Length: 143
Image 1 (cartoon, rainbow, N blue to C red):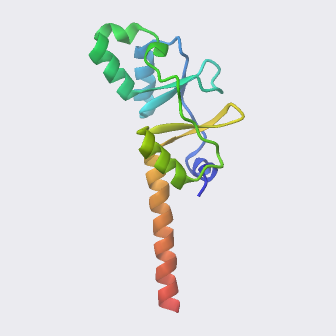
Image 2 (cartoon, rainbow, N blue to C red):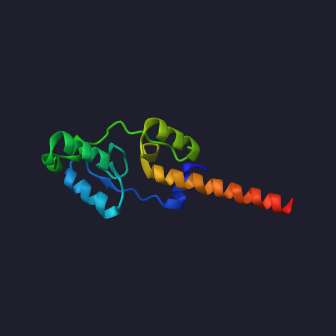
Image 3 (cartoon, helix red, strand yellow):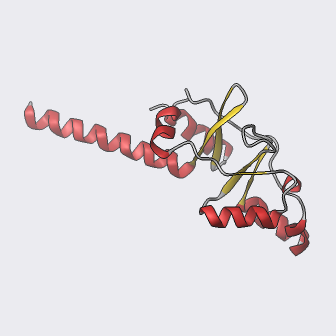
């Protein structure tokens, strides 16, 4: 299965945050949308970084509560691993595991198309395995 198929199932919605927004505002967005990471983008269609709950926790540990009033750009990961919509779910699962990342923006020609979480990847792989199992059971029962 390709990432483009996964995005069709889950939808292309991506919550973004401006790099100048406060970390507190980013936390509000995370809570409102029930998500674990935001794409940092001043345009809403490019990827300048990514900020996760984990980044905020580490920032709080290092700098204390004042970090909440600082800009998202101070905590974001600027070197973001992205993938094209043509990537396979299997390959992305391996990459996410190897790089220890839980969220990967999907881009094409520098334009943000969606975001995939490790949960999305696991669900897609489980769906694939269930479909394979069903085909095998059908083959055995009719063969």
